[in-house]
Length: 319
Image (cartoon, rainbow, N blue to C red; front, side, top):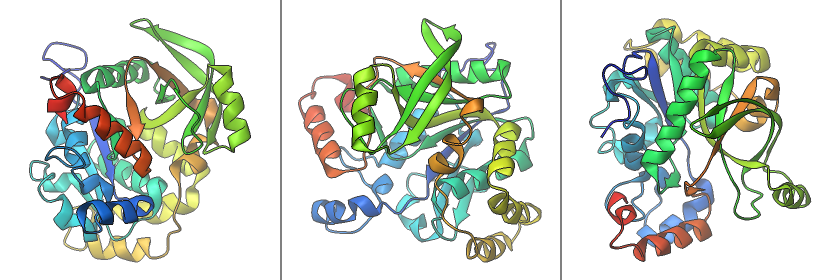
């Protein structure tokens, strides 16, 4: 079941690409995963429930909207064996092999430049590979709404926001401002403020406000507008990676990439881009979708316990 259909606006959009971020080390969950599986494997390659890894779930979810040959994955070289099964249907030229983890900022710009190299007119939807989402089709419909918005507002950058149901200082928090438009009854607003992992007192005030949203890190933008933001805010990162373009898809690509990555700092995308580019940022309010960033054992155990109670529900079979 695909959300894009021939003859529709999205179905005819040959310039839509998806980026799946799978280059993390998963250090926060290392001890938990060792105790659960008896080995140290980054969480995106683990099957916490059922037989499919989180990366496999993410790829299947993205494919509801983005054709498989337009899904681009970032991954670390040392994780290739872990990811082989999940990536078997992804074209090899759509896998950016990173010599080491340099955080989300470097991973995203690396992928963007690969896609720009293939398709300068691309629109991109960006997805972390370690999120738990129950109502996957509904969630991807929201992403499709975001794509429709960006097609008409190419200078903007859109992020999907979830309505909080608890205090949470590990997430990014978004304050919606002036409304841009309404899509299927859901508002898309200009972002007034964005805080990545704010202090507990600040989180308490945001939560009490009842209007702030959690940042899902699922984002939509045109490729050239996103690269432009990187050039403006992180030129020291962009310039070295730009030198790699002439080696894309050549036998020397990995060797040249390693030489560049060896000299790059780790850069968090939320701190370096989202917090500093709120004037360009719009947020789409996601409703009636259960979403969780599986960043700590408590969240994972809670959600798995819920799944075990849903043995006769569609959620159980999806996961």
